Length: 358
Image 1 (tube, rainbow, N blue to C red):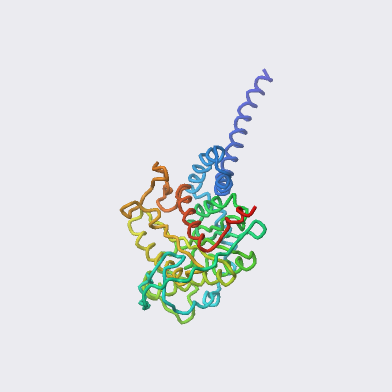
Image 2 (cartoon, rainbow, N blue to C red):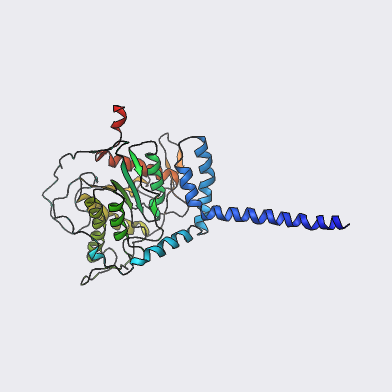
């Protein structure tokens, strides 16, 4: 009787123990969902990768829905706040001299900012010499920005995954709820300057703006006043920051690919995102030999220019390209962007011809 009683006590205890352990493991997986997804995403193509993504994708969606991806981001943001009092005026190099804006690597023509710079007409830039990289001297690639750069960043890493002439620098450096208007949250101007110099970056893929579509802006230079979001003064300061990051990278020897913001399913947000995209596209157009702009807005729109949660892949089959939040990208959307990043880089770098010499 005693043994039975003891057994009757042990069985529920064991079951509870198993349940608690399983719950703890599931919670740990949710907290590390981004890292798990990234690890699976960068595996070679094949059935194993597809099976892993079938598990890691929904796990990441649940993590994001429950905001369990935030603790890591909060910690990273807290570390960045040590530079909260920096005046960004002293963190950016001066802009290049005004020049006729041309269609170059950015794929953008006249100044889309509406600031009224005159143009003497289209001028074809000289074809720049491509930088050549090999496995012995690989292209050091860094991807950085807000949360919208994370999925495309994984896709870019994967696109170059089997190319020994490309060396990713660390993980995708994506920070949730950060941007260029709030250096008091995370000072990207200092972070980029330190990273491109210390890590000897050759190419950087930037993705900013998802959290910048509002009036408030910190770190404004002394004596500068701002009007509202999208106004002439606000736009001028924002362009200074975008161009400043491009110049910071360029002067350290790095080429820049800037990802524009995608269309979203929000009624008002696409208009605000187009304002930010015009600013970034205009700055890339001023640096046609060292910066390229990727128009994610058009790339992820349907044939009528509207929001498209699904788009046809090469074979014509519809695939889900946007996350359920209507803002971020799914894996297939990231792959579309990565292909465009590679296409924009081809006129500027050569990481392929080394194979012909083996």
